[in-house]
Image 1 (cartoon, rainbow, N blue to C red):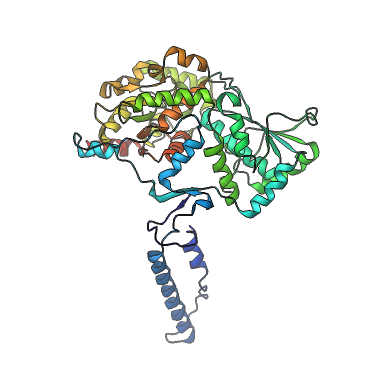
Image 2: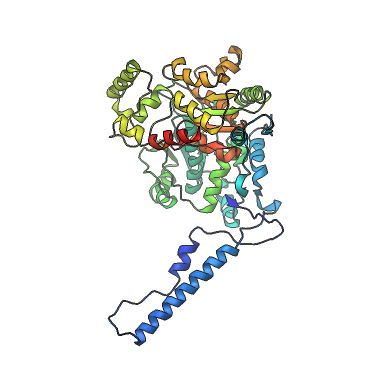
Length: 489
């Protein structure tokens, strides 16, 4: 992402470098070692000269930063889109069957100032999406796409967003290794018992077609490689660089023809060269389009919410596995808390969140726990949501079922989810397909006017990039959270 110029009349070249200040400072002459000299000595004059030079350089740098403006909006030919159209372009490329729903323009005639500000839409801060690759990358692509000797197979796991991230990284890894990518294999989810395949969730043909100029993607191994025994790697380190991947895997995949990778979550470095970073964006926001049945149901539910006016989407993390994994308690009474403690004791390996050694109270005070239904209700009221606010909540079945939602429903009775918006017949094809249902939630949230999450995670980050809607992420530290609510009421 780059930031566009607020003054379209000025055309400039160059990009803002986050290390500009550091680079300028380091480019200044280094001060000599300190010596014990008398006042007025030659070394003292040199020191004064360097000091004045440093002050002058800093002043010039600050003046430059004050007067400097970011680049003007790029022309249509350079692959960059204004922030006002980027979400539409992504959504349109993500669906040939439906058009994204526009945010509502909420008037303030019958609202308080706080309620009106709650629905106010951001302007995107002038950012644009750019995925135009360099000439060198295009030149290398010809050779990468043409090769037929090396094949990369990957097995992805986790929930929908973990699967998406691993698929994105697998495409980049295939490019780094100069190999053809076999359509990723979806591992059965042990928690939700979801046996969905790639084609059940994503449009496989669109995936291959969108990336055909950067990475060759095949549905299965060719007959020439079917009998090969793939080299299997399960221990790719966290944040592996492209250089590390080439050093450790290039020889193996060239020798054996097939390389199988497992456990790819956060294995590829986030610090990549520009072209690979752009490829990552192209996969995430253009190539990964949901399968047609998911698109149709998701947009159908979104239209049912949207047709009645503006609505808030809420990503609630109240499932039993969330409480076990985070080391937190649901706050529904001693019986429910005891059940979570027992499950955590029986499955200590499931406690994977940060601060695993902290007790519940310390974790809650540190802001490491999801908000409960009651806390979400308090937060929404403090932000300006009224009792008439219509809410679509996304997520799995809450631990404690209706009891977990009771406080939220009391304050906001117009609370909906896919179960009470869709008919039984509409949901039947997605029975025991947690990732597909999460994708339906994803689409309804994408078309909402405001998005709120009760816990951190990838879901909220994707919403912020795609939709540019107001995305509320509260400070979960308990003392800050409750003090803020007290003063906002």
